[in-house]
Amino acid sequence: MINECLICNSIINEILNINFIFSFKAYQNIYICKLCRNDFIKITGNKCKNCCKKGDFESKICLECKRWSTLYNFKLENYSIYEYNEKMQDFFQKYKFNGDFKLRKVFQNDLVNYLNNKSEILVPIPVSEKAMESRGFNQVIGLIENIEYCECLKALNNKKNQSKKNRKERLQTKQPFSIISDQIKLVEGKEVILIDDIYTTGVTLRHATNLLLHNGVKKVRSLTLAR
Ligand SMILES: [Zn+2]
Ligand SMILES: [Zn+2]
Image 1 (cartoon, protein in one colour):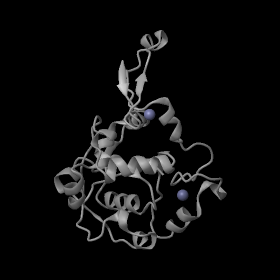
Image 2: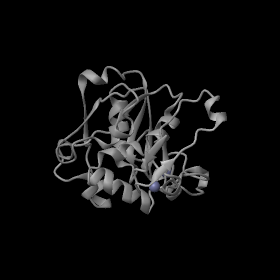
Image 3: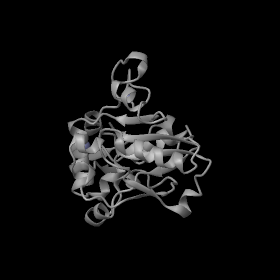
């Protein structure tokens, strides 16, 4: 099996070993070479049990989550797979902002492996109509395109793009989503995992969680590729 690394274009020489062949694991295509993979760092060790921020916090909850807990009557239950380091920033520049659609495949296996055996319904964070027009795709759905999901959230038209806002502006945002009424029926009374690409301030996920809980969803947690 010969593939080209989607990040550096070098040839990936992948030899299936005999143990794998007899292990009955589903074969996953590899889209990134070993060298590039080493540039992306998984979040391990001590972290905030609400938002997955790295660090050793008092009672395992970071200051920001403690602050949020006075605003909302739910706790975030977020898991993020990778650190948002320079390489990840680079990746998102190419994938999300330059719109290189083939890059959606680079981390699909990571999400599939995490979501494997989870019984919740997946709900991707939607992108605005404007972003859809300029990018041509929802970068979050790109990450989970091979898994079943429910699009019950819709982005409200917002004058300013979320990623162009500064931190203060982001924290002050009003609810940026609305419900798609015929789709929300599919998740009423059910448990949901929200999927997003990058965890920045957590405002997006808190708004989406709040909206779903107010519309009959039983439980919400979230998964982001990077944080
Ligand atoms: Zn590479
Ligand atoms: Zn936290």
